[in-house]
Length: 473
Ligand SMILES: O=C(O)CCC(=O)C(=O)O
Image (cartoon, rainbow, N blue to C red; front, side, top):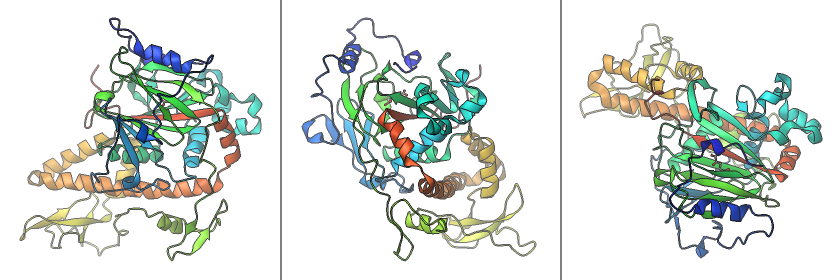
């Protein structure tokens, strides 16, 4: 059954031969089955002259660590000389941790208020309990009718566009995962704003199409896959370009950017019986002193999350908790500390005390390096209220600072970057704790059973250009 994405396709090039369709039909064919000899297997790259490996460049030096991800400098990242802008990242997940993402896709991401292809056929209650009902009775489950769910800005399949007022909160965990992936391939400013989660069944196919509805084609398209392997076709900007075929295995990530951002692509075939590595044992957790606290599936419930996060090497530069100051202590406006030291300030929103970093500008002069004009609590509250427009917060904050301190534009920028990093670290901590918790409680058997019959692809997009809103109508 074809997934409902043909509406995103642009018309085939009428002049040249449709080589994309030819390849699509070839790999989709059942009888006789196709010869897979030309399919690129990134696990065996020696055989493919067109494959290059991308070295780690440590772009921003931030190296944020999400629990269950191999450190980015160890990732195997490939490009194709035939398709600049295309990246293939070989499964960057630690053994076992794909299970967390599988759980999120099968249990959570399709839930209200996100939209799915089956909304019209299910009453509220059935939609709410889709996975629960499936686990109770897989033979009568609506999961087999689920083909897609949309997150963040909801893709409108009929109009082939996103709407400013149709947006659900983008999941924090997926947003962080996306940022880390995008940064590794040269897009540190990528912001995940929309996602289509594709649920494939063994006979599903995805026709040739181009994802052009986003306003920002400079931002990459990220595509993360779990479950059975698939054949992925990557072509050019018209269908007259013969596509390359490659295997995508569970955990693999594909990035389309630059010249490949608007390339035709398709999934003509799911390959049953290709699940591997997902059942590897749970990782050993050790406490800060290196003592083993858990092995296998039974984390002691009493294990403090603190212990778990220490184990996970979270790159955290979160300031120490705010210390109550003497009345009228006030912010240290002149700043008399050295670079890296902290001073006290007041949140312009809730007036609570907060710590700010001090940045030394010149030998004789130092000013407060404002992580933000507002404290992280207010910042997070603002962010939560407008999860669809992170940029707006930055813009507003930028404006405030422009008025109050026009001569410190650079500091403002650095402050925003620092604030962004601090904010990311806080979110990482929360998400890492959730990953540990969810894995602890995870019921793998039904998730694994579903995966035997399918594949999940999480397709993440940045919809808007940085600092831009939806265009006026
Ligand atoms: O399933 C895949 O690998 C690709 C999905 C895709 O191209 C899309 O959702 O637009």
